[in-house]
Length: 496
Image (cartoon, rainbow, N blue to C red):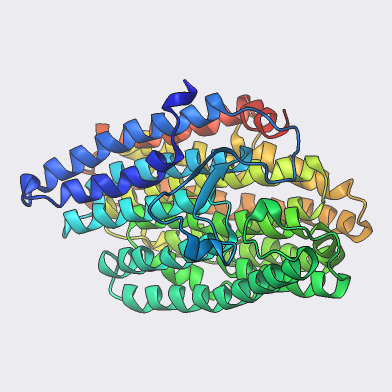
């Protein structure tokens, strides 16, 4: 079994498939291209699950102790070694969960593309495969400068995916996304360079290997400065208020498959970065800054929920709800205890499926009823009962109803915050409990205005979800129920 596991295959196989679909064999047959890429994505997802099966626990929740270590022979050379840079990859429990999440969400996005992508099919699937390869490398690299390079490379396919297949303002929204992220990247680079040179000053050896960085001797003030740089840089991607202004525009103007990837994976890059650098390498600086960061996290929860409630556009409602939910994830991390950490990671994964499912529901509504505007929708349940069922289940998971995935993450994140040794975080936790009730308002508002009341006569002919739509929504809903009923699938994997 172990001999069949290869990180290089996981990272580079999407690029191989991208090259294949651009050969003359496929011509411009978008149906053949879509079916080939969909089949590959299904097999690729199953292959990513092997890492879950074969991973051996290290019994250290907060340290990055990678397994399946490998290097890229043609990129790993003496020139890079003299700077302590190594094009190397490995996975820990968090990395394994992120690569499985990425492969699943990309699979759902590719399957959904049949409904929403009507032009430049070959280019679209090529960019998605390139993005998937970059993300797999980013989640598995053990070198902080390779991490940064991949962090920057991700901007290129995302910019093109948002701008080329989005609505009329998509180019402007894509540019805003790039500028915000690039601005945050400057702070990340400053943090990495300070960490790199400070570690070299103590050890006498230049090393960019995350597992070899020793921060025990770093001056507290310097730890705080580096932590702040990372918080700002990764906070743009989460996004933390006030660095959130790009999110609603990017979601509002992107196509549905791209919004699914953006909400489910791209927002999680910021959380992953905080865990990998702030949480693991600079825990003291992170703990000292926790009260201030926690204040912004609570603002995320409150402000995001309030903005979501007042939206009339379904996609923007889901986008602002993501801001609120990511605030809760950050609160869980700030607790600095295993319960809060488990809750944060679990809720991050749960939100990925909830958000992607809600975006798909919104896209299907747009196809069938020609609008995202809540004020122009009503009575959909009369003609689309199955769509109503899926929307209700996924929406209730977003609220945090027991036996659905959203409940576990919310409960553990808040409980971890309440029992934290950092005094003021307890109050933040209690505030978050009250404010989370706001999520029920905007989710129930969405369900009520879209699906209840009377149905305009012009929509009497609308058909319920087709088989293709049913399969994707059914798969997402099944995962939400599975994680809600058997949370140990993730929690035990993180802790054993």
